[in-house]
Image (cartoon, rainbow over all chains, first blue to last red; front, top):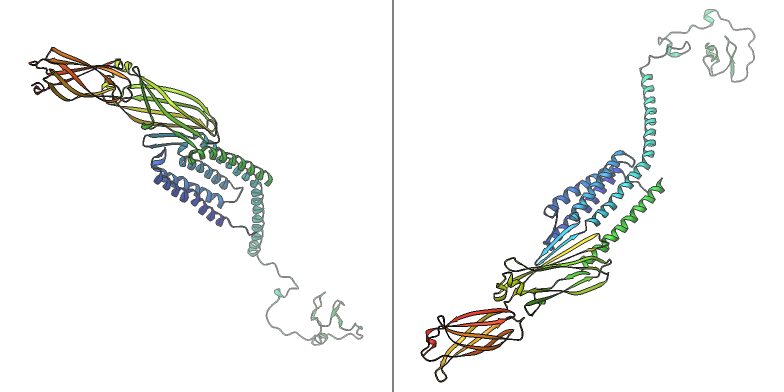
Length: 239
Length: 261
């Protein structure tokens, strides 16, 4: 199953919560006020303002709750805030549980405040779930954060190493390195020109191999330089 | 860990389900009209009168079609007249109405008119009035979690016991030398039986003649009075006097000078 991103979650939450706690209640409140103008509650005069304010707060808090990962303090804070505003919203919508109806010779006083308090208790139980989810996810979140820190430190170390390497002066050239050699062209004097004479009895060597005249090490016929002593092989020995 | 969250979720869902069920079963009977309080209208109030005491019977019905018993049901009433004076009041403690049952009963109380008369409510005996009935029903519902109170104010017109005595026609019979007075008397519908109307003819303070007539009470009664008046007498007024329900009723009718030939 594809996991939704936190941003998508937050947008979806904002949309659904706005419908549940602002749009639909405003429509219902308007219908009730139109059809039962005799109904009076403690908050009836400004009920739309209250619904928009507390509903808006629920939407904002729920959106932020959905935006943050489980186990974060922010998610816990916004989750509990949303529950708090939900309780206030509910209390306002139900006028604290006390309603009065006055029509003609009748006056009815209806007090269900105790039921409203029980419902508020039921709603606030969701706070326990948020806390429990937080405490369970907190360990995973801490582990994730620790791993993140380790990864970050590792990456930082590698980066530092690379940076230090880049900053360090170039190593001294090896005596056998071409890098330390002069780039000036020069003509190599032939061996015979300096009085070198071939030995009398050349040793038999296996096919495809030759022997360094300086150190006696065997080398492939394609080599120009002896791998052991670095001496040049004669031009005619290179195939 | 996830299992613990799942258990907590289930527990919360269960508690919320129970709370929802409690709220729904508490409110639904009121919304659906299964819980009804029918208080008496002005037409339904029955009046009676006996020996200076007015009895009032006001039927009411309380229907408890809900899921819980109605507890601590108390009905109280307060009756005041048009000037706001207290006429009668009482508190009736009924108690419990079981779920699914209907209670049909009536508020029954009496108004001692003599007592009112003695307290200065003369107008209720002889004049029209307007009685304000305030009936208050209060009870508790859903294991006493809900308080319900309905107040009903109804104005009931009050007809005086003796409303009027009117002279319709006055003539003089020369042959019998009698003054013939046609009259009608209106008394409250609450009254029944007969009463004696005593009519006296005066000229100023001078008593001239009198007549007695038995009148039937309750509604309008028409009759004729005969006064022996010798020619030459000049009666100027008729004083009607009646004892009805323990109250003395007096009314004077001024005769015109053309009544006598």
